[in-house]
Length: 71
Image (cartoon, rainbow, N blue to C red):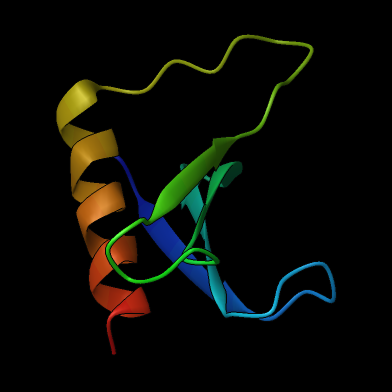
């Protein structure tokens, strides 16, 4: 099972808080709600090396980030 970490932040490029998703110490995505809570978007970061993540782990991380944004 992967280690999932969420980092909640408020970068200057965004008006709302964002959640960075880190899986096994690799930040792979940012989840944001700039267009509203019903239009949550994910930004997946490109890397020189491919990042492989199990689908179930990624879905779990996305759901945790979504819950965090709804607080």
